Amino acid sequence: TALSWSKTNNKLASGARDRLIKIWDTISWTLLRTVAAHQGTINCLAWNPNATILCSTSSDLSVKLWTTILSVDPTEKKDTEARTGIEL
Image (cartoon, rainbow, N blue to C red; front, side):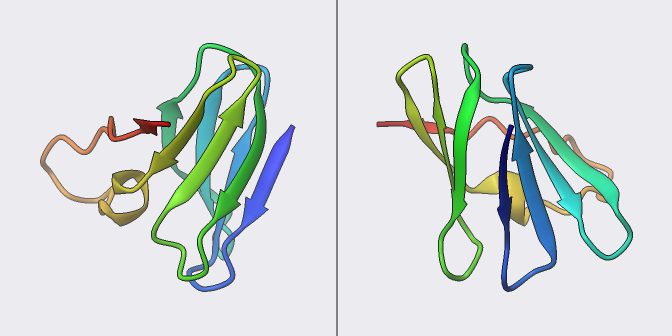
């Protein structure tokens, strides 16, 4: 299991063998977003200093940077599913 706490916006990112990244609100402990992120186990997660980008690494040998999973308000009525992983 991989975990990364955001120091600036009360978010926790988690990832594991299910290949999903989950973003949690650490005040209410509600799940804000789930993203099918990788083809293999998620090994590591890390936020940038201002918590606008999340980096994920996986046993599928990929590294991805995620942005919209952090900036989209889940209460909005429009489709908010994030698909902006940038594979390096």
